[in-house]
Image 1 (cartoon, rainbow, N blue to C red):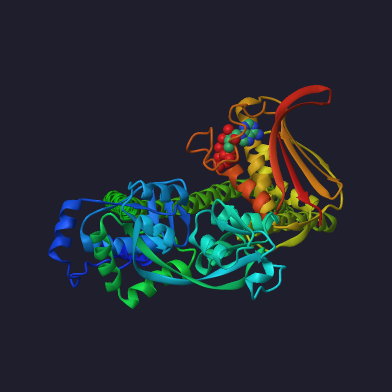
Image 2: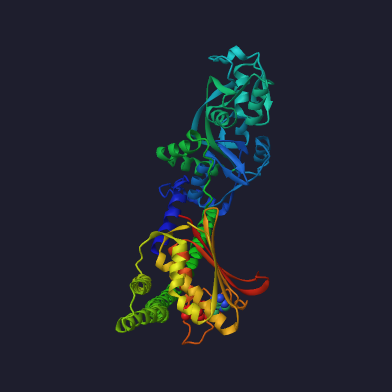
Length: 576
Ligand SMILES: Nc1ncnc2c1ncn2[C@@H]1O[C@H](COP(=O)(O)OP(=O)(O)OP(=O)(O)O)[C@@H](O)[C@H]1O
Ligand SMILES: [Mg+2]
């Protein structure tokens, strides 16, 4: 607020500094006689005629008297303390007429000439200025007017200098012009050769309108002294005005002269009304601005509080959310671990079942063979050939058992070592792991495996994928198919890709769930039978671990001329 008031004061100062105020303080030092004071008291107002177009000396602009003379009139007006009223005229000629008719009491600025003394008195001069000749810029310097007496010389009609020159040079060819501008324009157009007036006026007009076209090219010996003229039928008026003019000090004279003649472009008159209007508008604008700022600050403050509150709420919510998300993520990771462990345990359980099934046969062979040898030895019937044959069979079965153990431990170890392995070998070892399941559930596995496909990846994990797909096929076959349970496994190379297809004849996956089977924990089986992780793990191993793809579709196909329907898993891996 303080800043704005300071700003306002500064603007006022700036405005004031651009305007040339003339000191018009009352001259209390003037001693008017009683009769002069009495005259002024009765007079009420003084009427004034001026030259309406005579800058920088004077001019009437928008009904106001401006120019050098107007500053002197202001000083006089202040001193006499009664108004001096302008009588407007079209030109100087009309002003003279009005003075003669006593319509105006004074002339503001005139030189003293005999003819005017008939109706006017003259005060002392307040300005003394030389007369000069203006011509076009291409004309030579004129050091004596006599050289141009044969040429047309313009002077404003009724100007006193005209008569003075006519007396001095009877041969002079003077052309009356309407005004100074008119005279100078006629010089410019070549209608007249030169124009005569005082130095200040000509200088002012050339600077304003004829720069580079006209110039002051000579000086007359005559000087003109300008005075105030007062009606001669009221001589007391002259004594009053003369006193005032004599009382104007040199500093004020210089100030006025500099203002109007030395800086001719400053025609400024002090229009206080306009200044006040500007100041009031500026002040109003500042007030509106302050009010707007105040309202804005208020709203801003409210908004700040609201935003702070909301931010705090959001921060709290965020904190809670972060904690919640952290908690849930932790739980999910734990669950995932648990499920992975569980599914591994289930897989291990199934594996043990398979091994048990696979071992039963060879163990009974080994057992039968060894007890046979013992019996034959007891009854001394043991022939050498028989012994070798039986031992060979025992050895073969023992070898098979050992391989089963190797396969099993390889799977359980789950080492994540990336190796290059034969796809056919991998599928065979997976099949030997599920051999028991295949037999006990009466499933026929139809193989179509291309030789020499090498894969760079995790063999054990890929086997686990096969087991997961196989187990699902087995489950659906056991549930839905009585006879002729079929699982087809085919592998082949297409361009630089390895394609593995595993299909069954279990009737397919219902269309409304087929898009969900790879999602974690999606199962249609009873809790005790399925976790819903099998295909999710398969997807992760193939897509994330081996950069392959896996998808499932229901297909219809023919085998041995019989039509079947089932799910087909389509795995694509990169060829090593
Ligand atoms: N060959 C298929 N034929 C029909 N439905 C299938 C087949 N394979 C998978 N599905 C369906 O997809 C579901 C998801 O299989 P996924 O192996 O992920 O889980 P699951 O077998 O239910 O449980 P687990 O995690 O023990 O394997 C199964 O519950 C089943 O409904
Ligand atoms: Mg499964």
